[in-house]
Image 1 (cartoon, helix red, strand yellow):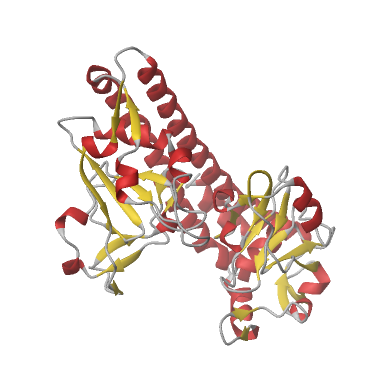
Image 2: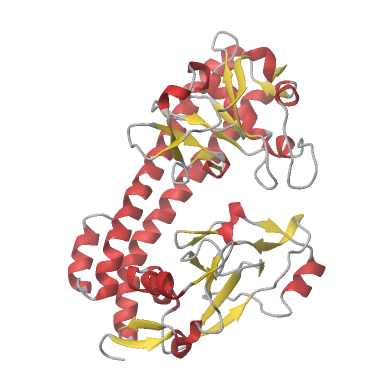
Length: 398
């Protein structure tokens, strides 16, 4: 194909179906990918679990994801997809499928971009089957679905342009992760130097409360309300957030900079900790606990790092039956955190603030680049924007 032309999924890729059951999750071992792992074209391992070597062998008997495979959801969250990276041993969860690109016909990353592009997303919307409870992509007919592609050289040129933005986004995320790791290292070193104190969270906090039961709104003037999916990797993502009626939220449940947020219900999300680094207005739903430290007793930034440090311990504190785990307020309040002396907290605070600011700047830039990439994507995938013109535009942003 030297020009853009219509072909079918089956002509450019082989379609595989994942297992129809779910293995037992473990704390370590090969990755178990679920549809929650697919996030706007990227594979988010923070939303993934692990399985034993025995179950990995069993679950990959049918199909083993390979580097360059396009992983997609065929039930719920339709339209989501991600590229399987190198060096990741993983098995698929239920409702996930694979498009395995045919060599010499389609570039794997281009196939991902084509899948995520508006033209194929419209095909999904038009051809999906509306079920009684969930919508789904019929895998039997998927190979016959149409998809437009240019020749391989043009595909690779488009991948190069969009990939430059993706790489810059990845660099920024590594900067943010490194800044957080350095901050935690500095905190641990300071806490290890004499005069450290151990206190329970309740004794040094002004507020320890669950969030609100949202009254959801579509009015952009209303209040941002965070849910469990907003808390990951020790940070807050506003992407899954919604809006709630502002007049239903009382002052103690309005977020304040340096609040610590703890997911307090749910399998897989309970115990995740994040710091609220914003002066923007917001609140959280009732599945999240707000911890607001007393500034006269502890430095709230240092105390926040103390809680990030013990996230694994918090994750293990859930109570309740399967699917209904619960972290009680009293249970969280009784948790002990280790802090440097107040003098060392005062010395450490500016360093932690500087590192967090650098990380926030990198992530803000990444969000802007992702928006820019998503603006270019449909224009390149439709052929309306020439690669050479896109290259010039991207040079000004990278």
